[in-house]
Length: 88
Length: 136
Image 1 (spheres, rainbow over the protein chains, first blue to last red):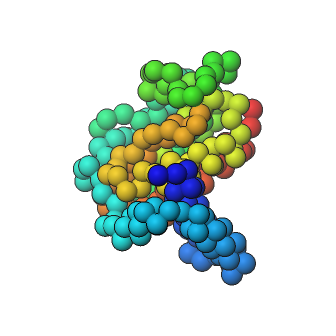
Image 2 (image 1 turned 90 degrees about the vertical axis):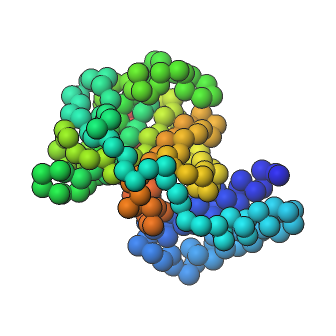
C-alpha cells in the first residue's frame, strides 16, 4: 500500500469534519473542492487500494471496547501539573 | 504541549458541556513520539482552560488528547489529526497513535458512537479554539 491511500483517508476525514463544522452541508464550491481532490487521489490509487477504500466505506459503524469510559474530571489549578481526569 | 478536551456530564444537574485544558512543557521538548510519561505522569503546566461545566466529578463522556512539542503550529496538528483519524477509525475505540510529532488519544461512551464524526469534530474544534487563543 502507498502513502496515497493514507492521503485519501485523511482527505475524506477532513471532508467529513468540515461538513460537521458547517452544520451538515458544505457549500457547492467547498464540496466541489474536496471532491476534485478526492477524485485525483482516487485515480492515483492502485485497484487493490480502491478495493480497500470501498470495503472500509461499507464496513460497520465504529465499535468501542466498553459501554462507558468510566472517567471523571478533576479540578486543576492554573500552574499545576495534575491531570484533569481520573478513573471513576 | 498537552491539549485535552472533555465532553462532560454533571451527575447532579445532568448539564453537559465541553471543558478544555492546555498544558505547556516550556523548554522540555522532543522529536518524534512524546517521551515516556508524557502526558500521564508529566502533562506539563496548566496554562489555560475553558470550562463550561465546573469540575470535579463530572462524567467524561468523550475525550480527545493531543500531545505535541510546544513549538508545533496548528497546521502540523491539523494534518497529523486528519491522518490519525483516517487510519484509526476502523479500529475499536479507544484510539491512540501518532502522526509525525503529534500523538493523539480519543475515546467515547458507546451512546455517542452513532454520531462519532460530530463528537470528535466538536472536541477538535474546542481544542483548536483554546490553543489559538493562547499561542504562547
